[in-house]
Image (cartoon, rainbow, N blue to C red; front, top):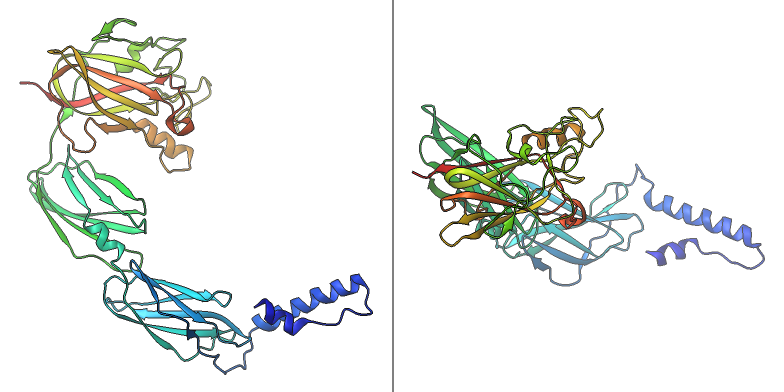
Length: 426
């Protein structure tokens, strides 16, 4: 293309001043651009036909077409289009600067006929060249083979892998009886991450849940429906805190000392009083020094634990901070990563359960941060395979890092509230 511009716009350099030459060169190039891109309303002549250079290169759910751009000065693009199995016409376009074009949305590993043609600045299309394309297995089918649904506590867990990291939608259709009536619902999850771990929560069915899965792409294609069968959800309840107690600071349980949580205006006892810090209420615990540190809770009785909900400190020390502002949520000195343990009294050893990172929500407004922070962050004791822990009386929360530096910051001194779920040991 540069050769084309130079051939149309070259002129003699002899006998002209440098400034005049630069001005003429600028004007000449500008005129060339106008000549190519200016729409000629009376132009009815179609451009030349693109010529294939070699066989298409297939990839997952698509292909790359290689061609020679027609040697017409008014060609602006080379386009390709085809009709999907659902009857939808898809079109892809590439600038005249390039000599290849990628097409997507080919959902099956069959032979497709793609129409390749050139378009000029007046909108005229060349004669179409039919190109036979047979793609590799599309991402929707590869992802569909990896989808795994697990029952959890009033929820469904949905896991999948997307090795190609293409944009997919996972459709979860489920139905169940609730309050004597059948409910039919659909949840849709969109992602291009290599692996995903999503859940549908707040379900209270009266019987097992029927679950079906489909995976779709951005082009209207969907995989076959996969019947995941009936799933009986687990149940738990909030453990009352009236019997809870906290060992004194520096007292050890099975070799682990209780943290000091009453630095400054904070108090360790506030972490189990069912009051969430907000504004200038100062209802939180605060340690001294950096992570790690351990919070040990005596539940007062034996339980099998299922979930934890933690609340961060909202206030920043500014008395004027009120509701509906982000405050310290998901930043500052709040804990962003922690481990969980239970005490095995027979061995007098702490049993590791899991690590959890509190995700920073993808929201922008102060109000959204506030609402999510006030609701708290929920985590499962066994996030990969939700289940009850063995019976225990003592729970340990080990703070590992704050939100800064990809959760590696040792500055994580603040915590407002800890709430646990599970079932009592009969």
